[in-house]
Amino acid sequence: MSVAPPSASKSELAYEWLHEQIVSGGLAPGARLVLSQVADKLDVSVVPVREAVRRLEAEGLVTFEKNIGATVAGIDPTEYLYTMQTLSLVEGAATALSAPAVTAADIAAAREVNERMREFLAAGSGHSDPLHFDPVGFTALNREFHSVLFERCPNPHILDLVHRGWNRLNALRGSTFSYVPERASQSIEEHEGLLDLIEHGAPTSEIELAARRHRSATLTAYLAHTGENPGFPTL
Amino acid sequence: MSVAPPSASKSELAYEWLHEQIVSGGLAPGARLVLSQVADKLDVSVVPVREAVRRLEAEGLVTFEKNIGATVAGIDPTEYLYTMQTLSLVEGAATALSAPAVTAADIAAAREVNERMREFLAAGSGHSDPLHFDPVGFTALNREFHSVLFERCPNPHILDLVHRGWNRLNALRGSTFSYVPERASQSIEEHEGLLDLIEHGAPTSEIELAARRHRSATLTAYLAHTGENPGFPTL
DNA sequence: TATACGATGATCGTATACGATTTGGCTCCC
DNA sequence: GGGAGCCAAATCGTATACGATCATCGTATA
Image (cartoon, each protein chain N blue to C red):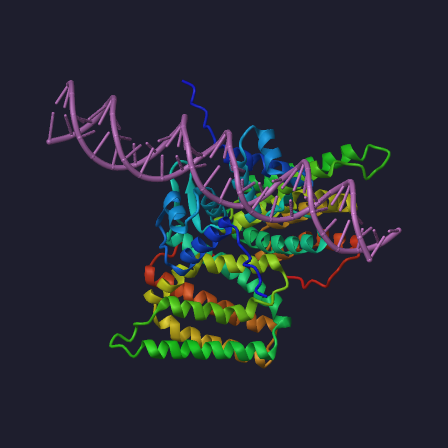
């Protein structure tokens, strides 16, 4: 007996499609979202689309101005930095809360992901341009690696904030790796070091410090690249 | 020349009304939100109400199940504690980031609010029942006090998270003060101590520690009262 | 008596229709 | 030639209508 299709609501369908498109980068920041066009594309009416857009707006993924319309949330560098700072904060908390529940198997899985990141990078550097690789794919692996460290967080709110932060930045992280490609290989080594610390039962404070350094290193690299450092206090 | 009325959209109207009702406690947690009834009450159609509910859902203020309907988000103690933990985290960060921008005038204003809290409590304790006071009004003052410490936070995301956390807990904080009324006067004294530390230029770490103690004290009191301590790690 | 089943009402989900607002460009006048 | 004002197309905002789904309650049967 085949189970009946869950028959997600059209509103849900629109939400998931838009979410996927935005997070994956298929819909670039700044892209205009004309409700009727989205509705036609998904073969639904505008009402469910409006609902979906409202939800995405509340998540910060789109902006929606009265009588103007919706656009995929922008890429203003300042905004990017603040978001990254916030994400770093909650991810740090999530990692700390996760720590007691992380198993040896989790660590092994993380190592495996890190290896895949290494291979991904090696495959990409076969090109004449050594910096030529797919930042979106690399970012996906990067997210997968990090999720091992925070996914066991028992606090659903903090976990949710972490996911929202990653969603918000996902399409932009890739460009950070594009700007500062050496961060890719550096990240892999730092991941390795983090896993070692955890496996050797290093004190939490030390692990946290290393994790924070790892996170801020990418941000720092980005700041150095753009030359835009509005003097953010570090958390 | 009188400016034309801003003519907020009906969706916005519905959102603001529901938001106000929920945060103030006029709509108690668990209350059912029948879309057509809300629409009638506000003299609009159901479409704007649906949008508003979706937004509130994304903020965690209501739950909205397919084909079931919307209800004001519940008061499950575990949920409450996790939310409080999360709020404590982001409020701490916001306070730390705000610190450099807090002026002497801000401190003075905070002291004034704290005095009003004292008076509020004194007025309430005139009753035969010394614990009889309006927890909602007291919570409003409490929020006003705390906002001095974090409102100058330059990171809009963290600030937004703090506000959402307070919104989420606003209707419930009152009941915490009802359960453990002695926390009210204790809070006022702790506020005093915090302001003293800031004014005397105490090191940030010390101020942060005191702030964290103050925040967790209310939570601890709640835990002691309910006897439900699922063993949360402290941040 | 307890349980399974079916009808009915309440509510949700979505499509469609239409008025309201904005945007962009065109014309006309200076 | 430049700018103010107007017109039309595009898009948004909302109401209404109707089919779909769920909860409730009554009834029949073991």
